[in-house]
Image (cartoon, rainbow, N blue to C red; front, side, top):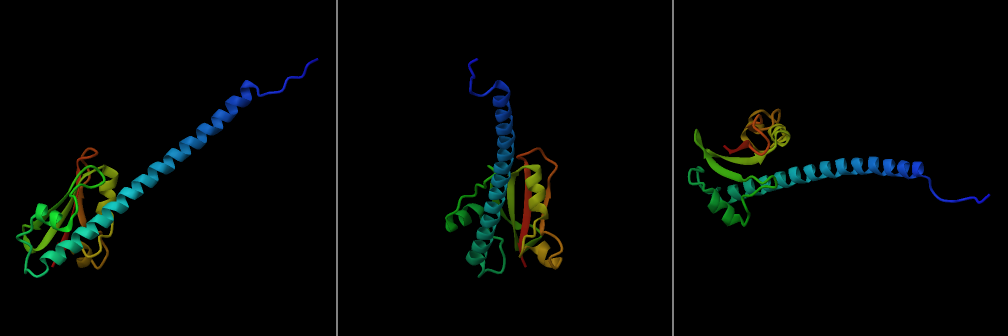
Length: 154
């Protein structure tokens, strides 16, 4: 009798099944890492926008002359965010000593994340002694249509 060596079809299917399970796990981890990277990028960019607005307009008593395109040009930053939406700046219509930073183009889960995130230095966060996030947003829209607004100032 001749003894053959090699792999059977069952062994090959077992190896392929194990590789499939590993691949599914890796894709999930990569997806989570990409989501966290986007959230971190938005956080860093909001901090940069707020500090730049305060630096550029800090000498004025109010933010009534705020102009998003001028501000973004002055700080050398695009108003595009990692979600395909934009950052928008506007004066708070009820208080000209405050300005509002909006993040548009968010998914529902990212909208909920940014709404509950502690935006240190925002009006809502400061007034609640750090008990609330300081942002508002309606996260019930379809993905890519949600907006979060964060108010800063006095």
